[in-house]
Image 1 (cartoon, rainbow, N blue to C red):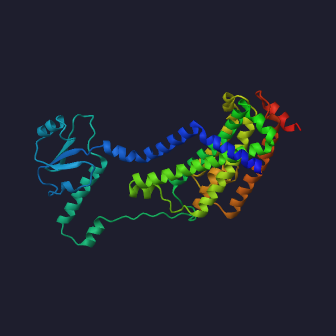
Image 2: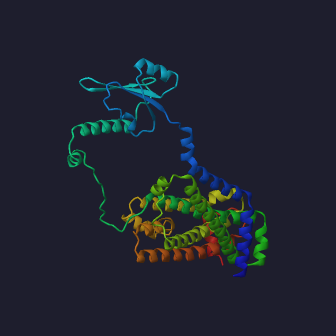
Image 3: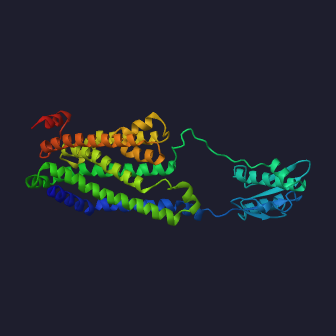
Length: 396
């Protein structure tokens, strides 16, 4: 156990010292801060457009500037030609002239026929305002007004009331969890191959057993990955609190369903998922001796990881489906899917226990195969094919 922790400590220190890891982490954290700042950046570039509305016959009783719109409304008495001149001088975005004959005629004065005119929101607002003004003139009771313009209330009745949650939060967290598991596990194969290239592995195998090496490397990189994941989540949370509008934050990032027990479960699935894929990557990393061969050697495991993530992603679209239940049990997808099935209330206690049991059994099987092949391939400096890997596993 002491040798395993020694290798883990050495691996973690080596990982933290790498410029590539430091730069990649800083880039991710900066991207998170900038990403949460995008609404403010867009808002700073979008200045409020000015529009002039000319209500010649006072159709709206001087209330036209009370409508809600993103533009700055100016009431005026300009003619159409005068409005055109102001548009050419960039004094206003566009103009609106309202006249009443047999019908209410609204003329939009734009820069050209291809220019953007009033938004649908503006048209709906001006229509609603005119209707309200006409109802006011009827001098009717409040009850009669409510009968004419009723307020509709919408609610949802679900057949399965236990399933609920914020889909955006679930997908965002699933993506972060996938990145953490994939990135950390991938580093295990890189670390093994790099040390084989630098001949460090020859020193290690004379100091401790291959089992301690592979378990120590897996543990060390996992701890570093866990710290990186904590830094990403913390940065995202602080950025959301500082830069996002409070209403938008509450709407998009409703965290009411996030609890301490869910956090512990998510951490458990991260650890189990990481161990599963890290041991697979350790297996592939030990079969090659050149860093440029790592990518091709890792392709089968990479495909399995991506398939598992997308299986979980599509399963989340319909939490009650059979696909969701299958994704929650399969060891390649359960680390990304099961925490969010639990968050939505779609997973039973028996499903959770079965899912964890399958993951643990998978880890033990993969560990046995990976360590056996690692022992026989660790000092092999050639590129190994599938037949060679099978021979290594059978070799005593």
